[in-house]
Amino acid sequence: MSIPKIETAIPKRRYQIGTFSAVILGDIESEDDVRYRYICALVPEGVNEPVLYIAHIRQSGGDIVRIASADGTQDLVAPDSIQDLDSFCDQALPVAQKLLSLTDEMPARLM
Image 1: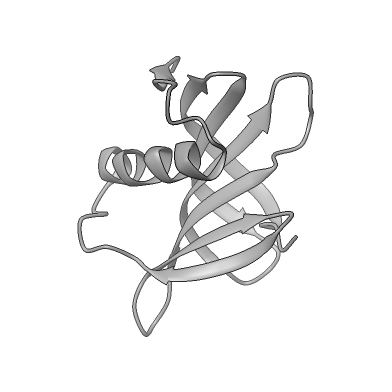
Image 2: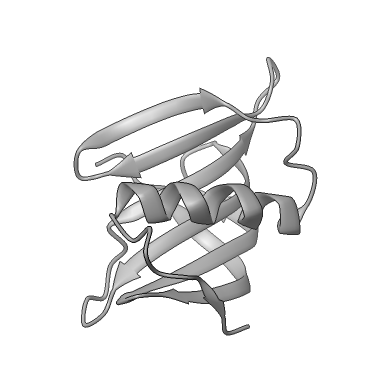
């Protein structure tokens, strides 16, 4: 899994989706020379490490959304609608729900 190499980040939001915690990170400094704007990290209950990352990445050729899990990494063109933290959450959480088969669960904002 090609996971973000985070040095420092500030948790901006937390959600509970079924048995998963979703932490939205911002103000990210990384050791892998990637310019992360936001990262959504999903952690199953009772586990210490995330199993899924959804990251909004700034690149000179245009922003991308990177989805990373044990199954691999996929880069997608970032929708123009991702302008701020709220719009990132609105886009990332449904993707996470679909990928983790949590479509019957509603994200509950904790922070």
